[in-house]
Image 1 (spheres, rainbow, N blue to C red):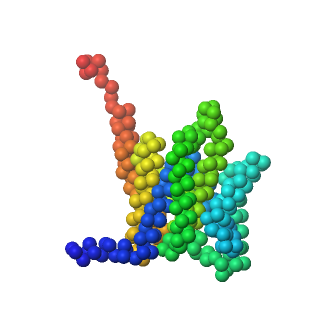
Image 2 (tube, rainbow, N blue to C red):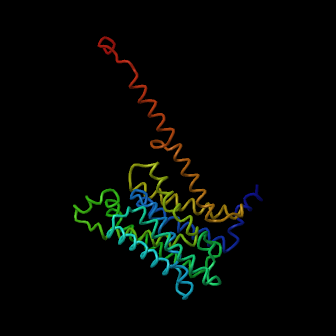
Image 3 (tube, rainbow, N blue to C red):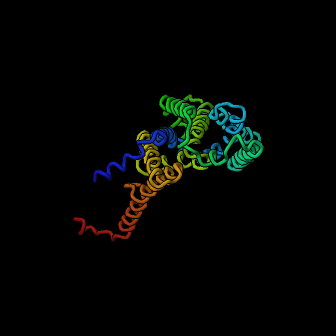
Length: 299
């Protein structure tokens, strides 16, 4: 028993694992807080687009020696601005616009990587490398996560109303355009923060899965936001921890664990789970088919 307990503490004997665990938890919390807004707004495709669109910014930042977070954030904002411009100036559908812009940015990133192969590893961008994260990158992740959480703390009610009903937000005097840009900036910043942990491919899962899981478990947005953040922190921490024992990719372990939690909620959630829906359906069918009692039986 003692040997088993000692084996559980082995990952904490290595500095790189300690850093990977707490940085993953920090990124998971930031993504978890933003996830309900992205989920309710229906921006899953937008999140996927921005996570891929930041690739050329990362490459350019490495080529010129700038912080990768700065290049990625600027590329994300440029991509978001390009989507908004094309959408406003044409009749092209939003999903087509997103597809055109994010594939173009991602293709540009691949071209830059092929031109400067010694300066950037494509696998690091696509899959992340949290185990080898540098101190400078940790500071960037902390700064981005802190700024994201600060904005959400002060503006979450306005952002919530905008996500639910933009027209009502405008009628109440809120500047919907500013809230739209703010949400896009938060989304881009969070993609940059999560890029180091899980890579460009799996960023979308960290931005969507916690919020979707929390949506199945509660009807109150405030509770949904805190529950999503807690799920993001717990699954990121546990996934990074488990990756040591199974010798698997940290990002893959985190996202797989989040998916398993979502599937459990999808099946067993008390109100919106699959089993609860079937019970409610059987109850409705029974009530409809139940013969009406006549007046004497009611008496």
